[in-house]
Amino acid sequence: VQLQASGGGLVQAGGSLRLSCAASGFTLDHYVIGWFRQVPGKERERVSEISSSGFSTWYAESVKGRFTISRDNAENTVYLQMSSLKPEDTAVYYCAAAYFDFGLLPSDHEYDYWGQGTLVTVSS
Image (tube, rainbow, N blue to C red; front, side, top):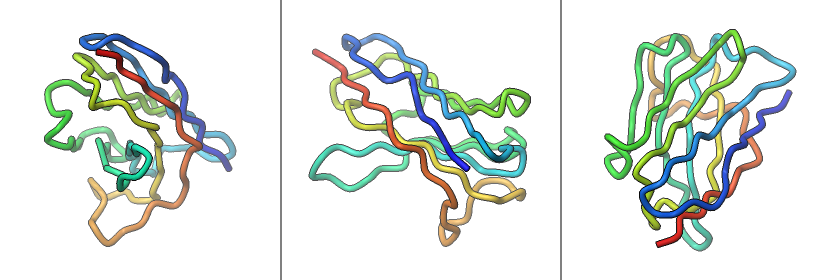
């Protein structure tokens, strides 16, 4: 069972990147997927989340209107399209999966699996 986050890299401010979160060893159909980011020395921040059906999404205020989360259950992959990137978006981005079929994840529900992270660097 593994989650693989990929797609990070170096981009100039104002640019775009698309991150992918691919699952192996299990299917994502019944899992809420969240994207998180962390800067060394700071707490991990939840960036976005998508329900198992894809009908419900959530975004942190800091990325709302710039990031779009989507999922392709046939491809067993969740995406985070990041546009209008800012230097403050620089972080290691992680995806996580939680077995939950009733919309977005309640605050007291923990994630079951975590990916290894992919580094996003936005230069000014």
